Image (cartoon, rainbow, N blue to C red; front, side, top):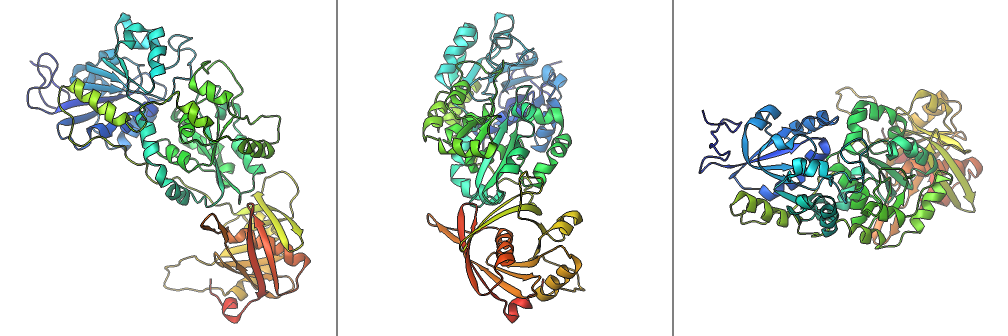
Length: 567
């Protein structure tokens, strides 16, 4: 009996497809990270019906379960490992040399797994070799594992040659396909920020690699600590977690451990594609020694180091160089002051120069890879040159906090206002809570309660408050509340104080560099509450300073139409 290909078609005795059949390409993934890298290379085969794409899970990794789930989520056709080992393929693509890849029959190709080969993984292979360049995996039995090893930069050829001349003979520089997607998506930055609800705030992305020296292991409360010190109307935070660390913890445990931070607005992007979209959207990155930061560096984002040193970072690697040239967020310094000082110290071009030592062929990686893979297949590539697919808009949940500790300071006609999560340290002027969203303990303690009027209802029987009725009801129901307010639109609110008068709050946007910037009206209401507590006389025009921007606000007695607005 002849050997079968694993998908029902007969293979020839020498392990190749019968003449005239499609070319079989097996994508062998050992972890979710490796799978994501393989998916980023698929545009090289886009539109080619001569290619039969098949996936298999390489066993032996602690993180394989998430890889299998990711393959299934992609809707890809899979082949069990045992069957894959009995079959032959025209091309086998892998993004990690680990696992028993030598059992697979076909021309093997190793693709970039990360950026720069910066880490060594203790307890695996050679203790002094960078993960991905370890001769223990690249040249088992003194023979090259792969017929072709695609690398991202010429310096990696030299590093590989010093470790394994045999493997280096089969290596060439093509660039980094994942970076191609990121660079191709830069023009989508505004769309990503809109999807994340960032507005004009400063988005800080924290990146954590995996392992005992990762940010998430060593400084697990850093995101929450930053949230407690950074005003929510000036900053937004995201945490990018390595897929291996997600697998170790499990998605449920991870989100539960981060629940207070997530409730306060922390973004937790999904591990495939979304992390890169968040990097593009970000204004700055706080990082450990993981190579994700090199992709941010290629975008010339300000980089701030939060790595305390250890055994994993390879001296002289691109990531080591990047951290050495970046300001640090030290444990011993106040976080807000340290972050603001680091942002002020950013020098454009420095981070991008560091990334240049990890990435070559920028803008041509997929084209170069396509040429090499079709050369190995022995056939001409499609007429259309491979191009990177733009990253999709993030869909990770973004929670809007429902209660805030508010700090205000009145200077002449200006009200400086900062809002923090309710667990923030330091004194506050009052607590603000969104009625019907915040918990009852926060509502009972709030100095100002507000609600948004844009709730849609589909029930056939409706009963709706007016602004007059609801504000009066809230002040009666919550004796500790000083102001009840309704957000009618981004530019109009209606508020009632204990003095009993109904106040129209008209908010003007801020104009900045050709843009019109609006802030959350609930932040303006916090400023107005502080103002009216001290200066109740109307009319008045005040400047609400929120997130380092000024929003002129006019306070007048509410009109009949404003008072009767239905909620």
